[in-house]
Length: 184
Image 1 (cartoon, one colour):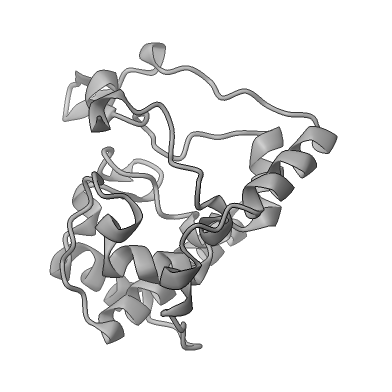
Image 2 (tube, helix red, strand yellow):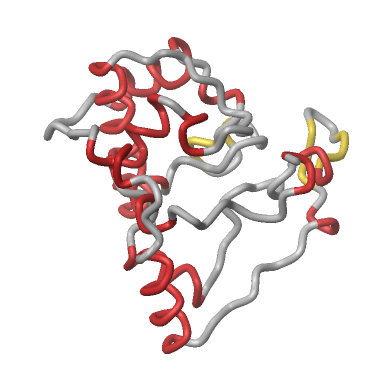
């Protein structure tokens, strides 16, 4: 089942995404999973490491501004996991980039699957340097806490991350997204 997926589950899109991001993305879609939904179909050996075979990837369909507004509104109505979101409380705060990266990479090993900046990190998961722009913080926390509660067949492991570490990871991803915004 995981190998045949062509896109993310959307039945809980209203719990997951930020509406303003959806409207923008639907008009000008950019790949979030650098190597596609199932990365194994889109990787080839390269000079240094595996490389993404862009010739095997298809572009997403772009919608008009009006259609993007309608689609985003409808997607935001899909909230199958309000129960999981209600359990999360994101505390205000920040984390120094170096400490955040150490938590993300060294302590939890997230960078094996996720990019934290273009061309830096793994290809099998979605890039995370824009995660806080597209995802609601309570979703990020809940998904880190128990990925299988959201997607029973997800490849993301449940690492039994503590509450304080989840807060640090959410703050780190918020900092990465802010940094990516400022870099443009």
